Length: 171
Image 1 (cartoon, rainbow, N blue to C red):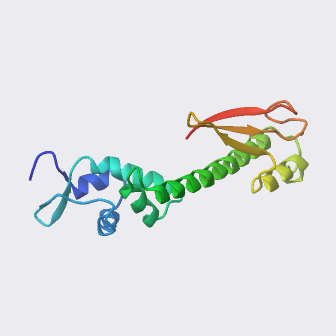
Image 2 (image 1 turned 120 degrees about the vertical axis):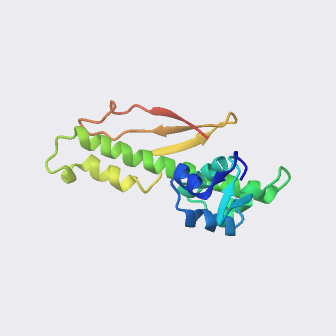
């Protein structure tokens, strides 16, 4: 076997994926083995980068078919680009939701209400974690998104009441 090729076990170890997951991705056409070492598949080292992209996309909620379309896309594939733009907007909304939830949890750390669940600001923050009322994300032409968060008016918020926190999020 070529010294530069990686055995399926080595790829599994480096990526944290089970060999069965690698075989599944191969059946779906997302990756390909280039040789065999006996009965074991062998891959080029570049497969690690491709698997990193696949794992990142999966953790962001992309389905196998979406990943396949993305990996096969070419600069002129306008439909794929439109689908990517929709997915980017969905991810921005999810990021805003997670940031609101994080801020609610940060508030909980400093809140003096007992029990915490009686804190009106904590209750509002939890309710708002599913809405767009406290935060919005705007994307600039430079590829950076800015989250605008207006913290609740609890006596002990993580930031002073009435301020706006701008958080840059690389896109």
